[in-house]
Image 1 (cartoon, rainbow, N blue to C red):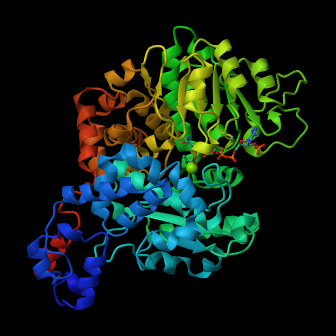
Image 2: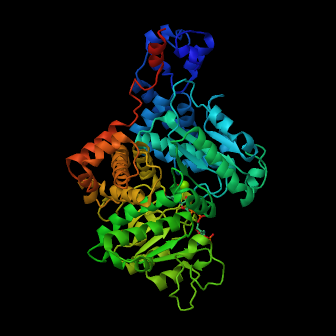
Length: 602
Ligand SMILES: NC(=O)C1=CN([C@@H]2O[C@H](COP(=O)(O)OP(=O)(O)OC[C@H]3O[C@@H](n4cnc5c(N)ncnc54)[C@H](OP(=O)(O)O)[C@@H]3O)[C@@H](O)[C@H]2O)C=CC1
Ligand SMILES: CC(=O)C(=O)O
Ligand SMILES: [Mg+2]
């Protein structure tokens, strides 16, 4: 939107077109007659003036008529890029149906196909996210400044960026620039799940090449066609991108997403203390699984003392190690265990078997901390061997290999435990280590279950009872964590804030959800849950003396003990305050052509 239009000085055709075409401003058939007249849109639109509800009803009919999930994904992407309000009205109201399309599993399919479907996701000129390639190194700041997803002279700046280099997209491996679907999908959940204003979200994919031969040989691949650069180029480039981003947007929260594990750990270690950032796969996943684990431990507490759990991780990458580290905090904080004792409750398995100090290979840096030295020289290669050795109470899959928790493994877990805790957390669904149905059938319906991608409910044959699986996905954490951080504005994200987010999520279950043995709250309640998570992050950052937002400090400081206990009237008031800060597509004041008409006195 040219400045002149907003100032009401010029009403030319191109300005009108830019309103009509802006996904953030136009309301399509819901544009009232007065606005149509003022903006000379009469004739451009059919005569009927509809409500948002009518538009939603029509869109849902079209959406549900699509014959594949990928088509549904493309339909929603087009809707988002032509009418943001309508898109979010639908996603928020129908989140249970929409999340598997805009997020895992379908976003995985979309990423695999991204270069093929790209032109059909948005009208020309409407950007889907910011691409920064290694060739852009000299011009990063200028490119970042020029990226304007919506035509408006409003001084709104992005508050949250999700950045990937496409090197480990879900469990699908290196997808290069096709990974863009992930930052976009995550940020849609920030809007739907935590009410971040969509204009203030910034999806970023950095392109440093790809080692994916299929992409390199694909005539339609849209990234640069070369192998990934070496670390000597990788780290300085990421550094230059982060410096350029923070110079243009000093308060921007940066979420690292789906970087290959070595880089993910290194980048987090390098930036966690001097940049407003966190890593979703290490810390977000750590927090969400800790939360589900806390509730699982509660369910089996009468049979197993919390400090007697034996937790086996199948997969020792950024997610496996991130979750294992987060669980240690639980044993230390809630059960007073020493770090060494807590560490003894955890075993890691990777492609070479049980991770031990004397295995004979050079362990990646992030595995060393958990490498066992009590194996008396014995090595265990197969998962079943490790299970026989460890006798786990909990089996956590983060290995990106579908079906590895097979019938034998599941049955054995059922024999070893009254209620085995089994979390196949890899994404998308094809990579899940087992299905909910298999886990139920092979454990006599006794499993305590959560998966990364949601599975359908299971009907118990004998009783007809419907059992609902948990969805242990970081989408329950990052929206609330990000919102809390944006509101409180600490200069960094700390371990205490992450732990608070996990613990608040665990506590967010309603009485009804607790009675049904849920590990996670119902997805339909995500905004309320995100408000609780955000409030916990806010309180912690105030308690740490890191919050820089004066309004938040004055709101929380005088009620700190009550807010820290997350109970009572003051805590509820804070949660409500957070909820009231959330963006809603029905709020007419936020952005529509009417606001512009008012401003520009057409
Ligand atoms: N539910 C959720 O919210 C989240 C789920 N995830 C999912 O977790 C998965 C892993 O992510 P991440 O840790 O970053 O990925 P990585 O690729 O870094 O780690 C995968 C790990 O699994 C091991 N592995 C792979 N195949 C096998 C096998 N057949 N047997 C034993 N071990 C195996 C690898 O071993 P080695 O080290 O020897 O190569 C590695 O340690 C992905 O599918 C991702 O989608 C991630 C984040 C959040
Ligand atoms: C959920 C997520 O972040 C992942 O699978 O990588
Ligand atoms: Mg991820």
